[in-house]
Image 1 (cartoon, rainbow, N blue to C red):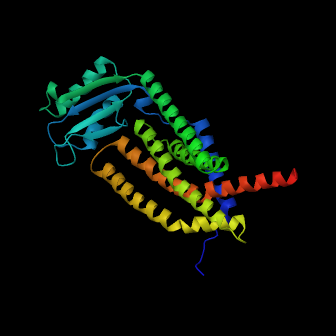
Image 2 (cartoon, rainbow, N blue to C red):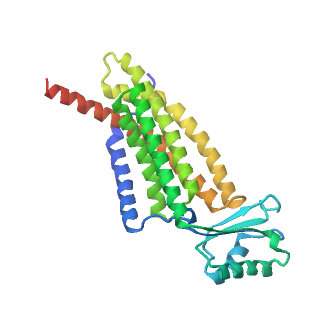
Length: 306
């Protein structure tokens, strides 16, 4: 007989681990909050084309006298041996005189820079950031509502509740990690969370579909055995899909970190990495055991009123 991993045996430990991570995240959010980037807080964006290949260290040293050496930088453009000869600086709000001083420092360090090489100088207001956060929240709300309706029609309401619990678990795990380590959050982070919602629900629905099919041929198996068998039957698919996706995301993260892109793209790749791991974990250890608990609670309630 083929060996089956007793996943449900570890559901209590999984709930405890997730609960501890969420508790740490809540404490961090209440005490530290989120490190919101320029897209949400507002600030100044400077986009310059440099005369030749440059290093991020050079740019940070140049920005240090203005107390801007820690701001997010992004390499852009197509020319240059190291991924582009343009740089995007995302700084807190700078008045006109300070902006001119910063641009002057760039021109002094790279004498070949002209006014045409100053591609973009823009102030982003905090109002835009609040609107972005509102639209992101509405997008997530509509996605969750649509998922509840679809799963309720396709399966049953208990499946929908379990799936939403897993989705909220995944989203909060990502937010908790970013809060604890004070990683800057910008608009790509929102895109990553919405992407993870779609990925996680797909993996969860595949397992739920297997549970529903196995319930039709339950025979003498207990409900716990049906759920555990369903998880095991989809285990190879879940692992292969997750490993394939992780391989691509790790490659992207390494590329964004060492070759091209900047802070925003690294944050995007990191959020996706965390989400894929959490999504695979929650589909197996959160969503399915949650449905089982809800089903058992409903049966106990029916027996009590019988």
